[in-house]
Amino acid sequence: MLTPNDFKQLIHTDLQGFNRLFLLAETETGQIIAFSRCEGTSLKRLMHKVEFGIGVLKDYWGYKVGPKLLQASLTWATENKMAKMTLSVIETNEKAIKLYKRFGFEVEGILKKDKLLEDGEYYSTIIMSRFLSE
Image (cartoon, rainbow, N blue to C red; front, side):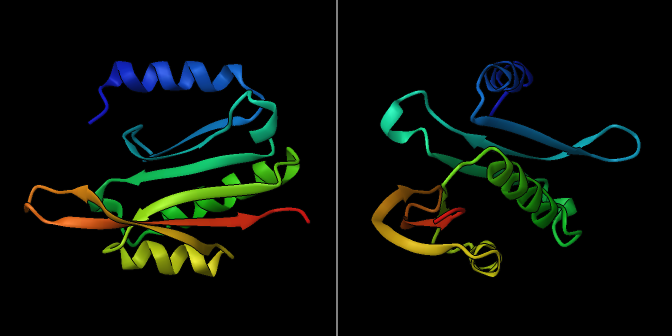
């Protein structure tokens, strides 16, 4: 779990890079309900892509916050000439997988038994990507 200071540091770091983006979604009262992030690297051979991540508070699932943050991130990545966006999602998150496929992401691979969760079970991570330019 990220602390408020962790978020501040992430935002500060992301402001320094041309291939980084940090978005927040908040209510009218200013409560942060979601964030998304695109993280690139300064390594020349990997500068063409960013990794996408998102988090939405459970109380706000179903309000289309996630799709709006994803669309904004895709728009940013395209405008900034990123060639590829990647993400990872746990195999049980069927809603997210369906959303990503709707936005043009494809499965590139599966990391079997990648996560050990609180229930004591292992779960696979699905690696997905979308090419933004050909």
